[in-house]
Image 1: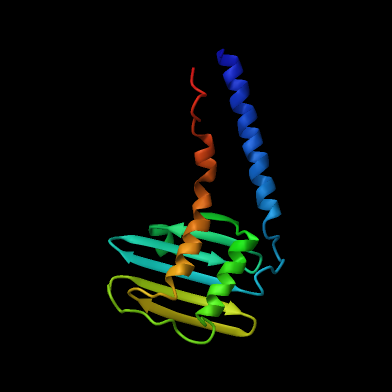
Image 2: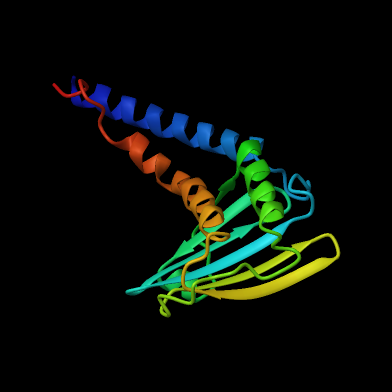
Length: 166
C-alpha cells in the first residue's frame, strides 16, 4: 500500500471510530433518564499492594471508573453506558444480598482489603465499609470490573488485526 493510501485509510478509520464511539455513548443512558430505578452506587476498593479502584453507577446507567491514584483522589477517568442486562444483574444482586437493608457480612481478612460503599435508591441512603472478603460484594465487584473493561475497547480496536500486514 502506498503511503498516501495508508494515510487516507488511517484518517477514515479514526473518523469511523469517533462516529461509532459517539453513537454508542448516545445510545447508552441519556443524561437525566432513570433506567436503574433511581440507583446511585459508588464503590471504592483498596485491594492491598497499592491497588485502588473506584466505580460509580448513575441513575441513567452510566458507569464511571477511576484506578490507582485517581481512585484515591475521587477522580474518574472513564465513563460509559452499562447494558440493560448489566443493570438488571446489578439491581438483582443488590436485592438478593439486601444491600439497602443491612451491611453485607465479610471475613475481616485480609485486613488490607477495604471496600467502601455508598448507595442511594429512592429515599434510602446507605454507606458501609467491608474489610476482607465478602460473598455478597464479590459478584457486584466482578460485574463492575467487567463492565469497566470496555474502557480498553477503543485501544484494542486500533491494534493491527491478523492478516492485515504486508
